[in-house]
Amino acid sequence: MTTEGFKIAIDFDSEEALYMQVKNQIITQIAMGRLKKGDSLPSVRQLAGDIGINMHTVNKAYSLLRQEGYLKIDRRSGARVEVEYRQGSDDKEISEDLGLLVARARCKGISAETLHRLIDEQYNKGEA
Amino acid sequence: MTTEGFKIAIDFDSEEALYMQVKNQIITQIAMGRLKKGDSLPSVRQLAGDIGINMHTVNKAYSLLRQEGYLKIDRRSGARVEVEYRQGSDDKEISEDLGLLVARARCKGISAETLHRLIDEQYNKGEA
DNA sequence: CCCGGTGTTATACTATGATTATAACACCGG
DNA sequence: CCGGTGTTATAATCATAGTATAACACCGGG
Image (cartoon, rainbow over all chains, first blue to last red; front, side, top):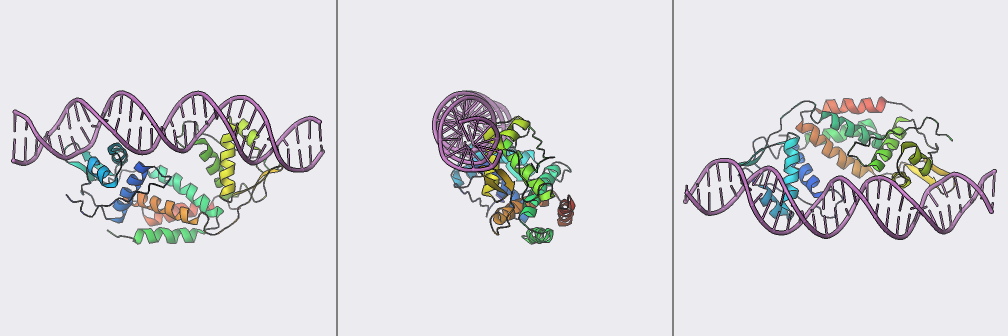
């Protein structure tokens, strides 16, 4: 069990889907270096029990994370962090999402420099 | 009619909701300067007819855009671009979305400099 | 060799959101 | 008054999200 301090905080009042909250928080923890390559995640049943949601909801998050290259899932040993840098897998979608985000920022009068600063702050968080 | 070259391209195969596609494309056009403050948008019925979707779907997009400060809607004259720079309205949500986007980028090995470049390119597009 | 814990799959049910359809309403310029 | 605004109401359909229950294939360990 390399997952000691593993925590997922679910907001049941959020509009965001539960499986999306799980998925996004795992991605965030990988980016922060709090989850590293090879670390094993709790089983779908255990994590579901911990946070009080259904097994299938967690399984949906895990499956999507595997499909997008964040996890490697073995039928017996469970799920482990993989993070393979396969080019063009998510890059196009990231660019599209960034395009819309920049548009929203421009409409709200947020400068490019402000976005640069916000990004750099994120990159300095939890340097692995 | 200040809306001559107004175009909305809908992808019916996309997973993104139709009203979201309409909403996001209008935001993008405002950011690009192709829609400026005071420009009037087509009526909900006309735009719906043009792109072949229901009136209520367009109305949902317009209502959300008004609610978020992008449009000013008058019952008789229709919808006009507003873009009021009210602080903190969407800023918090933009920061949150940017946080997740940066996390995804880090996991995929995209550097902060690359994101800076992508942002600057967006800001240089359609300089109003 | 079976037990228990993996992920996986199937089915079904409920709830919510998205889309369409039809209709009616209040407002007001021409 | 007519026609064009946005707005509201109601309902029907469809897809997705979440839960519940169950069963399956796999395999390490007692």
